[in-house]
Structures are given as C-alpha cells and as structure tokens.
Image 1 (tube, rainbow, N blue to C red):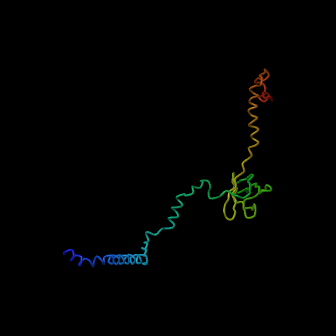
Image 2: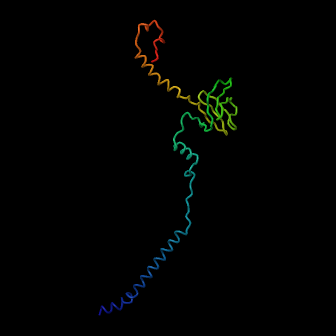
Image 3: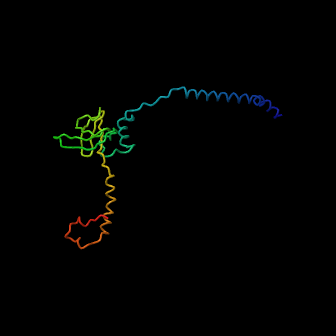
Length: 191
C-alpha cells in the first residue's frame, strides 16, 4: 500500500519531469544568451593614458637610431656619398686657399679641366679639390669622386723580366776584366 500511495504522490512529478527539465534548460539558455548579448553590445571603455605612459616619439626615434639596425656608416664617410655619375677623375691640382685648385675630369668623351665653383656637366658643380678626390655638388648634396687608380698592366712585364736578369747574373761567367775597376753596369750581359 505504501507503494501505491507513493506512486500517486510522485507519479505526476515523474510524468512532468521531462517537461520541467526542458523548462529549466530553456531558462538557463535564455540567461546565457542575455549575458553574451550584454557582453558584446556594451561599449568598451579604454582607460585614459596618463602623460607618463605616452610614448615620446623623439625618444623612440633616437632609440631606433642608436640601435644601428642596418649597420654603422664608415668613419671616413663624412656624410658624402660616392658619386654614381659617369665622371672619372684623372688628375688634381690641389693648392692652398690663395691659389685656384683644378681637376682633370673625364666626362665620357674627353678630358677637361675644371676649376672649383665651375660647372662640370649641367647641374653638377665642382665644390672642392683634395689630393685623392674631388667633391661635387649635385641637387644640393655633396658627392665624392675618387682619383682613378693607375693601370698596373705596365708593371707586370717588368716583374717578369726581373727573374731573368737575376738568372743571367748568376750564370754569367766571371772574367778577370770584370773586377772592381769596371763600372757595375758593365757586368750586366744579355743572355
């Protein structure tokens, strides 16, 4: 009897349990949906940046410059760049301030002399003459043209001929006439 009575009391709850579970889940889902909508719909307030926390652009730029991200410029560069013009420096006459300085410059077709302050090609002025280079001013910027290196091809045959001469000296027969009384040039004989 107790069992029958318990079924009468609990029976309606057991029959309504799936419906109650669905209602609880619907309420929970509605509450979560409302919470997510409020989370994404409310504007985000950014905290005000105080004066101490602001990035100082000058300091940041100096820090980047001091980091030498792309290497360090050569010490002798002095701010001028090597010119990319088709100009070759053949010779210089660098003098003191009281005398004019001149340079012999090849602009492609012929060699010309140019004085300091003179225009070499349109838009390019000879700014200064130094013993090993000249400074040109093009579009307000200084450019450097170095003195052309002399050709080393003429020195090569002389270097090859020196061992033959040394060989000839070691193989030359000694005669009594080649004593200290004769000049040193008389001792050299061609093979």
